[in-house]
Image 1: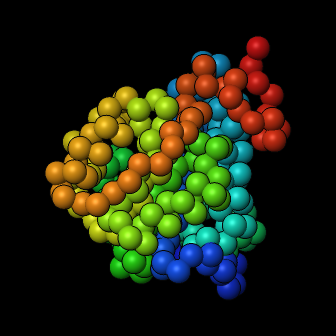
Image 2: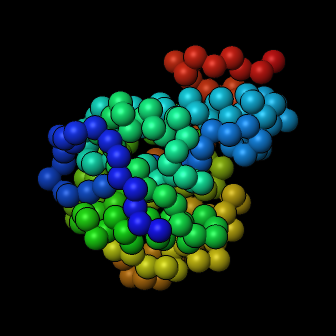
Length: 223
């Protein structure tokens, strides 16, 4: 499926000498399909509402920072009002995720974006602590390294920056487990790539993570 491109006229000013793209991966905030691991605590509607707020928050922060061009990679399609509204508000390109699992979707997006830029940074929407400064550190690292990994406290990762693509980084990965960051680091080593690790950040994935939601998101935490 060809990429679907939307967005503001013009684009953000790049704050880095490296020609890069920031790829945000987001699911339509549909009740029962978004943030499903939080449904026991928030209900289907509440989990979808949180997902939408996290998505809007990270898109707004990273687009406003102007560090690099932002691409929003969405599923199942680009027609949800949330995506349409974000593209109207921010300098943003929207693309459709392609692939049967998370690994193939990440690989396809990275490979596609590397035809348009010298480096890519892959991020999700689950980490409200993913700041412009953190992204700036990743971009700075990619100016002289092959990859940058931003691990999550739960063993996954919140960011992966790449200057090249290799399918082994995404194939047969136990997504959602506490081994993802460690295995990714091992595979980067096996490729012989020069890479660095950023500080660990926290994802909001499970009910016990909700106590760490920033008050600025304006969401009521469960009792």
